[in-house]
Image (cartoon, rainbow, N blue to C red; front, top):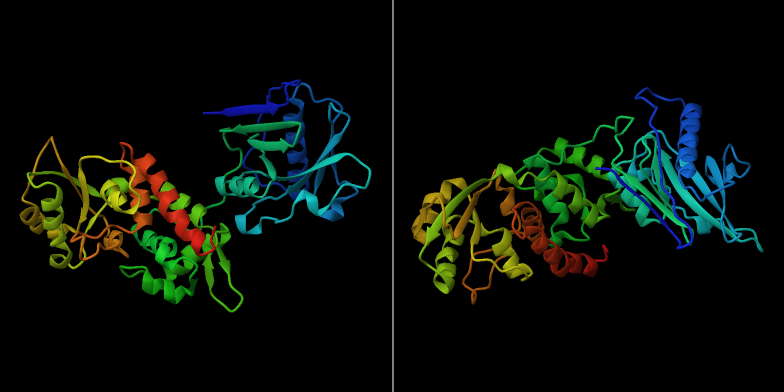
Length: 395
């Protein structure tokens, strides 16, 4: 689906029409710059009210770090300049953390300067970084976010890419990669300085040091981890990493079982609490049921659990549960990987209840389990995860 918007002041309106003529062939730096300049011209030409603009290659101010300059006369007599940085294969860690206000306009001139990032392909992560750091952006497909304060905002997404994106450095959808992401994201570990060997020890069940190295390099490239001065690294962008894991996570790989029990309320809670010791920690509240303890928001009548495959019979005995085809009040998830039991949050002795999945695990499960899961996930994010990360100075 293509989303195309032009936000303007009440006295101007516009629309955008672009065409894609590039292919997947590699471009020389000069050819890439020329192609991006032409694409910018197409985008600006689509804003009907915008007249008298020009796009320069090799502007005289190029020593200030940009490759193209577009000058836009505004209807109020001011003018805006787009300072465009062109990159062939940008990686998030290379993002130039500078802003237009690092180069103020000459004294006495009414000038609005906007930094713009341009590339053959812009990944969602790069687009996110641009927005966070007040940069505009566009790519050769015509996808763009061009925002000139007090003038217009042009946003276009969904255009089919004309250049293949760079190959991802690591596959975050595998169970082994998920073990590494849980350790990095768990709020108990927030703000922690890691070494690759230390992270390997925390990523349970065990993962290879080679995989840890591969995932860490990928997350550094994505600007989600950062180096620390005395060696090692730490989490830099928990929200970005959580979003990346959410998109890669495969909830459908867990087996879902439907059960019914006559036990309710306190009786059911006390019965399930016995599974803690019986299974050695391979049973836990999950999804909605975990969220009810971690960030009460969405109430629903079913009890959700992760149960290790070898302990399902013991669960049936303890919960006095029978498998059913309909009318379930117990949802049992047999996990693809025992990593879901990492750093469970236990109840107090007074609660006499089973532990819960770690909040980051609860979050990604809620995002994919249907019903009002996304609503519950958002409540968990706001009430639990963000608060913990803010306390540790990560937000």
